[in-house]
Length: 302
Image (cartoon, rainbow, N blue to C red; front, side):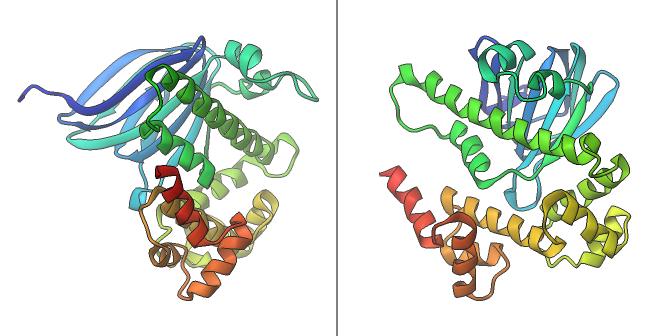
């Protein structure tokens, strides 16, 4: 119909008190603005396709899918309830998932106190902190499985989604805490260096199919080539080249497990011209060969 605003699959469910799932894989037919209130809590946001602008309180965020259908991941913590405003600028496909949890769920249902204090309190120490990272193959698989659950009994679907949501929250908290430590929690990186590092990671994530030189990445990040290598060594324990290779291998793994690529195509995604070298690097990274990763997807379908 001409007045249809959104068509497609939409998800919105409270899986357990304080644990929420929201998202969709839909076509937004027209530009629109939506406003609401956002409860206090942790929001784990994953974008596969589309682009939106979001305002939470007086902070503005951009969320968008990256090149080649790769997944972008972010964790936003709001310490107090805030105004929420979302702007969609025109017709587009939006494929995204948001898993959110209240501090009460994190304390009572999700996580316990850890060595040096309450983990939820540490997570919520900075209002509207925004952590972005490259999701692991396991996290990509978890997010995609929410949109394509197995044919289980209807009564078990909520339990299935809750299990996936808990795993997703755990992965996101781990990424956020690693980011927090690198940003200065233990003096490793200053905030300015962390911003430069994040720029470099965002560039790598958005251009995994291209040949990226260290010089170009450093220039875009606003740091020297040697300075960029230092940042990656401190934060990731890898050189820039090793980090790029790891990201490409993880994208290849995700493409094989989802069925989006055959072994030869996955080798190209990872940047290998030699299938033998690709198989060796793949097994070293994931503990199985590319063929075994692809076969495991087939066995799950059966």
